[in-house]
Length: 399
Image (cartoon, rainbow, N blue to C red; front, side, top):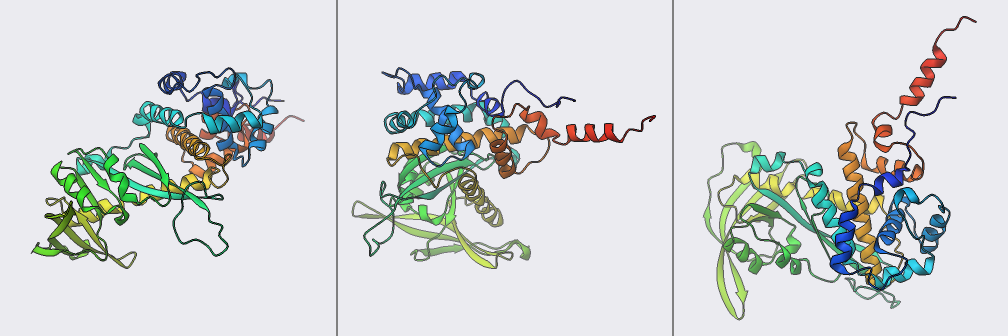
């Protein structure tokens, strides 16, 4: 019987873990002192256990610990030193600082940034476009304050808000923050790095005139949507290009009022009114990019949809409906590990010459997580062994 040509000495899970440089883990552990006073269940064991949860789509502590206990004797190839019991994993999720996992994620992003980046958009705009948005993850318990009115039965769910910034030429977040779902989005604007070579794109939920003034003072571009109830004066109406198919209906220079410390000061910005023929909707964009073509301002805002696709990808492919702990730290750890798993799968997807849908890659890894097949080799040509066997059977014989 012929052996498969895709057979490999390390399981699929082991190959995914091998994408994480041990130096990144060691440095993060040292920076955050996350293994201090820990005898057995180290940070690396914790990380591997939570990545197993993400890839296998486990929904409970018992499911994670029970499944991993069944791997006894098979953990050497992915360097797991200690298989956790349910109570051990629960305590680690509560006590180990979640920021160490965020540091590991950032280290991996630096390691693979060249692989997952696509500089075609930057070459056109000549500036780095970064998209900021948030996504609320509902919790079954009121661990973090949620938005909305209190229900009549008195039972109110909690919610954690994931704020992230992505480069438009990448498919993974470059910066991540957490807050309660009740926190207003614009509170996170002060965390952005103001840079003359960067254009930030965000929804109108981030409208903050004081922040916009700071953007302009630091020559940092932004594109957002103006609020429906915004009060402003039109100073000048720019002449529109003769190209009637651009969708631009108005291009105006407006003056807004910034109120701070009982004082008022003017802020000059640009408002572009755009009609999307595909969506049959009218949009009004607010920006400080005075020299850019009006239709290009609208095109930049359209790029914001990429971060919506990222949130959809995370929620659909990783277990972010069921959390393994009922405390804020455990929730953050699980989200960070989902982000790490998402990054590793993005790296695998970028290494492949064959086009695979992300959800199909996730499903494949879940099914073959502990099968000993060469991940990249198999994904490049999954029909190779079947085709070889078929051709052998179809060869004519003398008898």
